[in-house]
Image 1: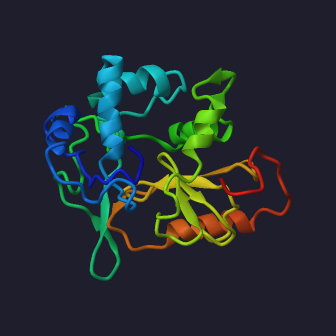
Image 2: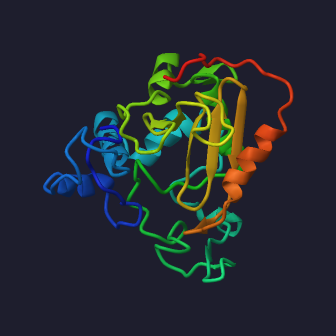
Image 3: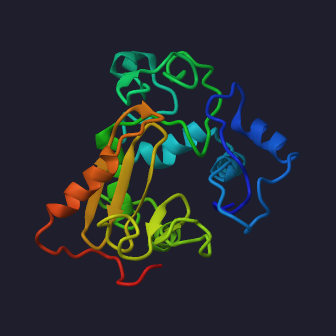
Length: 256
């Protein structure tokens, strides 16, 4: 059930439990045969359903109990509590002149993160957070599954997550894709990023990267759907250009 599983994508706006969607998905043809091509799709949503069935808990409860709660990610939710309504930032879009304008209401714009049905806890999309919270999660990944003396993942699990699992069919030169993370496989694969750097981008522009060799977490948050700006790539370049002293992390010198 990795990124080459052959499933297409999106469930975050559906008014039903994610497992109901996944059961219907099982009756449909694959977008590609397993192992044939890279498909950024429902594979992680299927895993979210597996977690629900294996744990006996809704995915939001499992995540809060096992991950966000212990990590102190107090502002990370699938759907925002009503008491935090005024803290939810607006979603923006790009007009024909590439200027930022407020996105329309509805599931493809502002979303239903406060007043929505609160039923679909998708494993692959649709969660709200803050810079502080997401930085704590990425710091845990940087430390190979531990933070502040508490272990959340085994080091070997982190290694698997941040190792290319596509067998060279990711389709982007110099890059691979692990279990939830893009991985830089060779110099120049993603600008100035060090080999072994991993991370991924959110649909509205969130960019998170972890560079184990530089012992570095990079996080840039924006809230613009279908944006055509290159600010995220520029941000990463500026961070690397500011590094003047080598730092020691846990990554090996070879791509994994």
